Length: 475
Image (tube, rainbow, N blue to C red; front, side, top):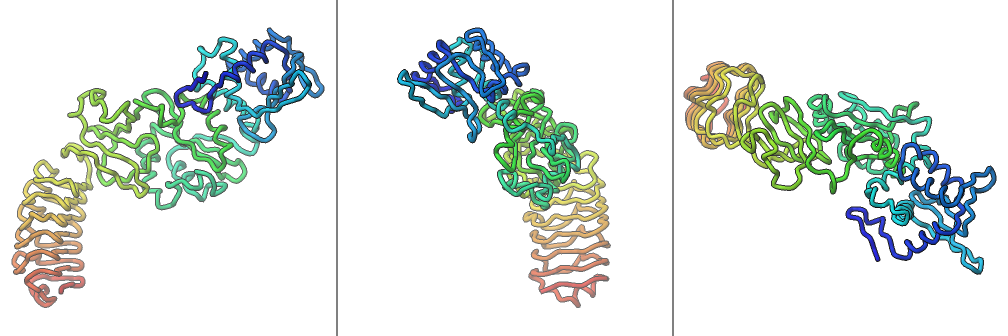
């Protein structure tokens, strides 16, 4: 007979183990104090420990002594393995007096004991996992005096993500893809956008302020959630998980965590960078923010959104280390930019700018499919760019005022009609189809770029029609 719990393959029980445990319970046992002490130290906090101690006590009248061991009048012994975490040593004595020592996983033994005393049905595999973590936490001292757990937020999240704050560059902590200084801009998502829904749990040396591990703690629709744990040494992972057992509703496990979500109020994709996300790799943007969601299955059940799929403005995946956002689908609406000064709508395949705010700060509508700037902003306080809009043949309908640079490079312009008379920054009209300088700005306060046009204009040509205060670049 073999029992295999789903996602719990390490606790596989053979029929011989049942027989051995049954014999162990029916006869007499000798349990060394190292194991008994641990069971007793967590008895008040752990139901499995309480049941095992009670059952053994009822059957065998445990007598704790101050000498080498605690006796239960048995022909078998159990004690903590001196070098292997998660293991005990089970010593069997044959009728001829020969001893057989077997290394056995604590969880495997405990599962068998629970089954024999008819208590297994009351516990899930996760409960046995928690029991093992508690045992190991006691064995390793849980949190040494020179370390402590802290929950940090805001800019401190960025601080402790940086490898400069790592005690050692080892384990999955040392190999973390988000540990570099270059990641600080994308980590602002945690520090600023998510300040109300996420904190960082750190295992920190009190004296040096260096960390030996970290994990995000999210406020989700199902309670607090401990995300993937990054540690410099695997033995520290159980210390984190033990903390999680007492403080959160769920702990990182991609095979079990489903239908869990976090809402980030006010988030907008415009000009954003995002960190690599371990759990919440999918994001669903709505008008007033972003849903981070781990659905039960793909494609998701969109009925979970109040307005159904029509409410979703964009679906994204956050699995890049360079801050880039993978667009799975996106519905465009100008409403998302309401109240924003700087607007970036590049590479959205827009066919029109209708509905755009009339006054903006910086405006970038590069790499789109519209044929006219009609409907776009009339006043741009900073830079304006319509770079690489390949269907654009003139600039009619564009902004009449641009406070800084104007970039219309790499379009299909045959005319500069519509460009403002004064450009207060740089002006770039390179790589177009211009054969004439008609409608060229009368004044440019910085450099001019007018390269690779069929008109083959010279610097002298440009300065003849425009007062250029900077340099002129032509070919």
